Image (cartoon, rainbow, N blue to C red):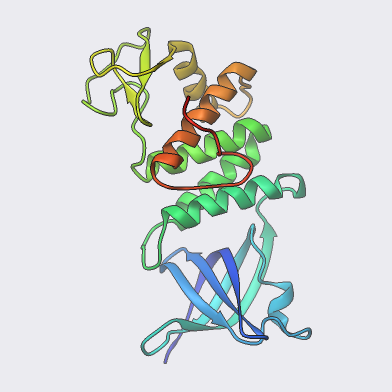
Length: 229
């Protein structure tokens, strides 16, 4: 089999046998792939120092005849986030891993953009903005000026409503009011790194994201475990 190479992000690692790892990568040109890193858990394996999330990686591998390929080499380059943002970065990669499945041709560029959003903003705003971006680009949410159910345009000054993880116009209704100010705040954060949210707006945005994830059966530990009231 010919050897392949690509830029990559490591999404997760799973132990396999006593010595190896199964590694899930998002690659720039080959999409999401799964590779066996043979011997990666051995003390002297060169993979131990290079197979790390939240770094720019360059991977070489050989395709399998019928199943997963085999990792041949990994080069680790610059880190993508500061150490202080590592936990938020790992949570973001967990969301990326859910959105982009094995064989998907996309995801690498989107994940890099999300990590950039996280790194450029204050951590609270950054994780919300990065998650919102991923959900939008994946088609799980719509924009902030149209009803996500009927598609009708909504005036920038009008209230919208929340209904079963959808942002709705007055005609479609909902239980919770989404004020125009919150919509403006979200748009500002998405466009500018220096904008900060009020505690109230941050909590509302956090809850909206959590409910979208809940609607799709996604569970995370610390950031998106809200329940719909």
